[in-house]
Length: 348
Ligand SMILES: *[C@@H]1O[C@H](CO)[C@@H](O)[C@H](O)[C@H]1NC(C)=O
Ligand SMILES: *[C@@H]1O[C@H](CO)[C@@H](O)[C@H](O)[C@H]1NC(C)=O
Picture 1 (tube, rainbow, N blue to C red):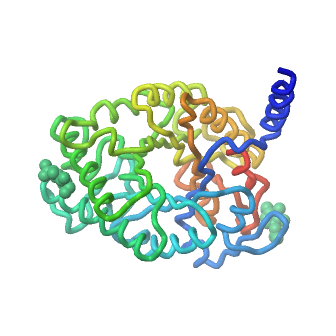
Picture 2 (picture 1 turned 45 degrees about the horizontal axis):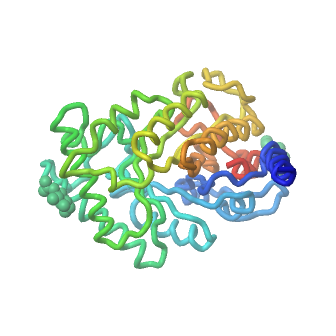
Picture 3 (picture 1 turned 60 degrees about the horizontal axis):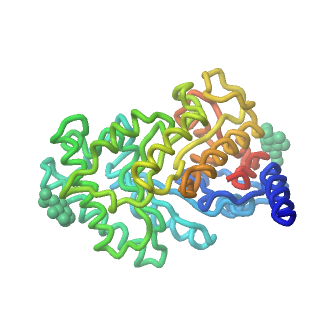
């Protein structure tokens, strides 16, 4: 009794100091890295030492890198394979998010790639062939993908308009496409975990709109997917609270029994007039406090199903707003020097 009391006291004080290693995946999305380096930025650690972004972040506790993959364009397969070499050379886990598009895919955009056709049957076949060829290419160069996200923020389906959710035919097509992608990955030798990512992780209605519809007998089955991922941002609605996140993710776990990752998040490093869903300071310390609130939620989910967080583009100098209403959400200053919030991974 006494012994366990001491152990518990030590554990509690360590977690109070933010020293626990609660999550398996402590990550960041570094997709913009070649663009930022190409613009002449040199990254520096908090002590001024110059280094590669992935190595600096690893020093501060990052163990996972997420990259996006488009079917062509800036984030094409050539880009992805080059990034994978760097990620694996640094000894980090690799998460690849397939957009199944020649450009950005998100809840409002899911454009069919050029040449994929426009019928359910041609798209079902294209997504199979593409996914199989992608996982094979990563395996062939000795940098296998650890986590493969099928689609990006596919709240309303994918490959629009054919696979657009909201109607029976649309969900049926989307369900078939995702199953086909999973079969393609398996046939290509993929041994990692599959993931689906939906935005607004705090909003149960948004999550259920997707998950209540997407699993259809003969198409996508729950056994095709290992991880349910969410995006969780503070400035797209003041409902994005830790309490709402906890309650929504708990319902997902109780329904599907799957692991959970917060696959995109960030917090402003500097003043921002947008309404935010939490009251932490808009400073590097506030960035860490926001992450700690997420980690606290994930670490307490049923069945230890909360597995990780991936900070969105911590080093995208030149695009610091990252499309958000806040001007700068990075873990680095514009001169390339790490902010104190680069230690955020220690709070994951
Ligand atoms: C879609 O493609 C997958 C993978 O090839 C296949 O298993 C499935 O039967 C196809 N679905 C239909 C309806 O053709
Ligand atoms: C980089 O910018 C930050 C924030 O403006 C500043 O505190 C720091 O001194 C700068 N570092 C260098 C090496 O210029």
